Image (cartoon, rainbow, N blue to C red; front, side):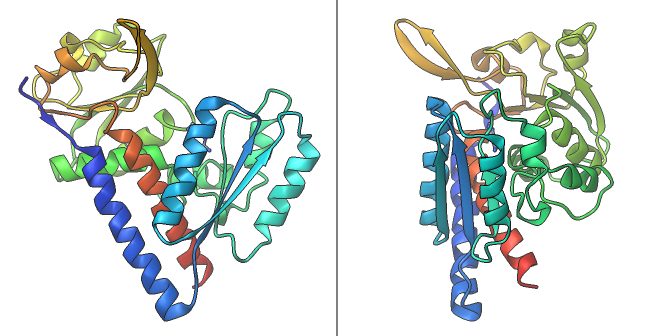
Length: 287
Ligand code: GUN
């Protein structure tokens, strides 16, 4: 193995420490405690785990956490009424609606009912447009955490060839915008891309966000490339449940210059950026 392992857990701990210091200052000097409301509809076990860890991290940073767990059969009108209440609550600075929502709810409509200034996920259409035009916005947490690790490892990203595999609104598209903002030459690849292997082999920066376990083998990685593995996939191997990324870690680590592990890479940075976005929203709301 030759690649440097990018330790997302350690980096996230540092960011969370900085967030906690900022929160302590806001409390002491301004008498304000940032608050994050997390809304979960239904009982998806993976979502429940995520929501629990988000709430715990929020409290550990010294912020207020407001958890709203609603039954799976909640109507759109009921969910929109809750969001309206949270939009107008001065103690709530950030709102996150955990996705996916049950099928009978229109996710776009729900997300676009958030106050964009409280949309700490950066999924509201206003924030998407602001990011795409290089204006001040809320930036989606997973791409933001990935960008922070890339900058930390590489310094300037200017002029590098970046390939993002995956075109989701949550990760792929905003990741591409952020890399473009840092002056990379960006390709968004996906399941229909012709010669996906060849496209990946050109990448100085390879971001894998497809949600398919170990889809990208080491021989698709350019020697010395920086690989960010966004995938978190649960698989059964040797009779055990295991978490793996979208990249075949063992083979990719022999070729890459640096790589994020799964778990312990992008995942912890996503939560750290959620906390940072909540503090940002709080500061903007209070001038
Ligand atoms: N589901 C999976 N990832 C995310 C995320 O980053 N934010 C929200 N709200 N839901 C998710």
